[in-house]
Length: 130
Image (cartoon, rainbow, N blue to C red):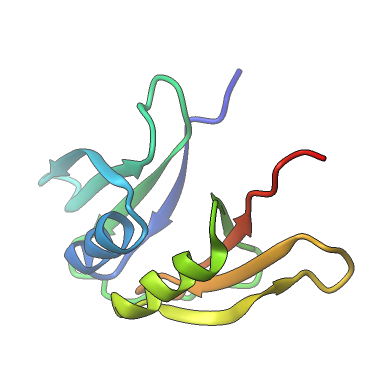
């Protein structure tokens, strides 16, 4: 078994696609429309779906906002240079929720940003093995 994807419902598919592809640097893998069901699916990620997990963005036609609830935590992305990643996200209009710094009870350097729908994305700086 392996993880295939995480699904997020989005209120504006084009805005979300711009964020995940242009701001976070993912690639649109495929997009499918289901007129009978009145929804569109778009799959984004960094690697091929056959080899890595991706994110499924689900746009239900006519829905522009969702209650995120309190059960969802975040998506985590590894970055080589967290300060450069946060600066790039900010420059491209992304919302930075937490500036880079060590996590509260450890030394791992993290930051948090939000996508257009408010989903939290944790950036974790890749540090070489000692």
